[in-house]
Length: 66
Image 1 (cartoon, rainbow, N blue to C red):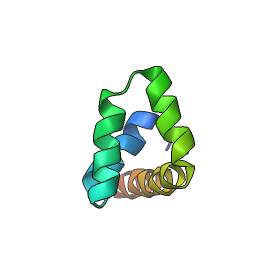
Image 2 (image 1 turned 90 degrees about the vertical axis):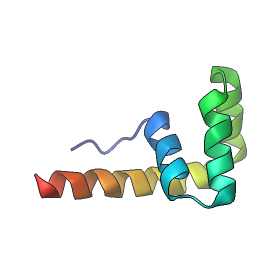
Image 3 (image 1 turned 120 degrees about the vertical axis):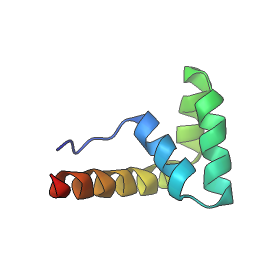
């Protein structure tokens, strides 16, 4: 079970479980180049942390089912 989650996992979690703003942020992140992705992460660190935690919980749930 991985404790660290990738940006992609965070973005997909936002897109799946987020509200309208989080989904829009995920869409922007999916189309961003590396520089603009960093800008998005830096602009919304609390959201990145929130959805990283959700992604970790989902990973744990998946690992518990095995």
